[in-house]
Amino acid sequence: MRILHLCSYSLYSGPIPATLGLALAQQQLGHTVYLGYDRKRGAFNDYEEAAAPWIEPRALTPPRSLTLSAKSSPLEYVHDLVGLRALYRAVDVVHLHLSHDHTLAALAGKPFRLPLVRTLHSARSVERRFGQRWLHSRVDGLIVRCAAHRELLRQRFGIESAGVRVIKGSIDAARFEPASAAARLRARARFELPADAPVLCHVALIAGRGQEELVAAVKLLGARAPRVLFVGRGEGEAALRRAVDAAGVGTRVRFAGYLQGEALLDAYAAADAAFLAVPGNDASMRAALEAMASALPLIAVTEDALGELCSVETGFPLQSRDPAAIAAGLSAWLESGGAARARGLAGRAAVERERTFASEARATLAFYDSLLTRGRVA
Image (cartoon, rainbow, N blue to C red):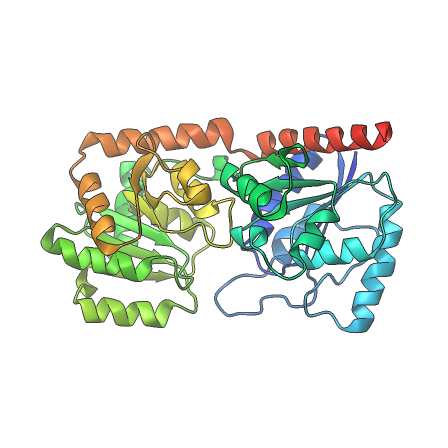
């Protein structure tokens, strides 16, 4: 099968890691796979890395060049429309990942029997917004990351389940593993964390992800509170640092900055559990899956996709992001003894069993096949 993925984003974050992982897994299964992405903006902020170094070495470049940027000029937009119409003749399926490429593909006027598939990577794509109903009507199939999003499509847009497939997000689980005792000690030393203290990590300092509520919960726990390792940089970092200072918990908090590669693995190695409050703009839940693959139990608010990951088997579910609720969840973790380790290992087993790119690729290909068969019958 010849597959064209379009993802109009230029950073290695959000939907790009999930899209790249799926494309490579499909390629490894013997399919011809192309991936078009935003080639214009590059690393447009100073705290995330560009997607290009991750994608360019992978032999996924489409036979026609596309700018595929939300910042495209009118001339670049027209160039992409023409290029996409040519690409339609060279592929069997077009898989869309963001609203810009979705709009472009709809306006390009696809051939009748060429399936268009869209993955909705965030809750924002199932909200009632201008043009959203029209976009959803211009594809043959929709992929969502959790059952809650499928239900919202039915309630808000009248889209029945026959055209929607729940295919859960994945990661490269082999890249992560439970830390050895020696690796844990080295990582603790790197981040200046006590060797014998419980450590909670939170990855990605995007504003509004529950970090300030976590800081308030740490204050509520006082001397019983764990150390907290914040990983990442973002627009919410300055406000979070002020909140840490105001709460008087600076001795219990470390800011590691933006990490990648082995440094990110060290952050997970230094931690005993991971905190998440909202899925954010990545319903694949990469941060949660990375922590689970590292055998860390989740302490997470059970909302949307997070609710399908964090259970009493894999972590310590929170009913809300209220500081008192978070403090109660932290207490349950701190007092659980060996149960926390067991839940972390159960989470890793769940990722290896259900959340690999290979399994996602097979499920996605089966969905393509069902749409192609429906098109032939029609």
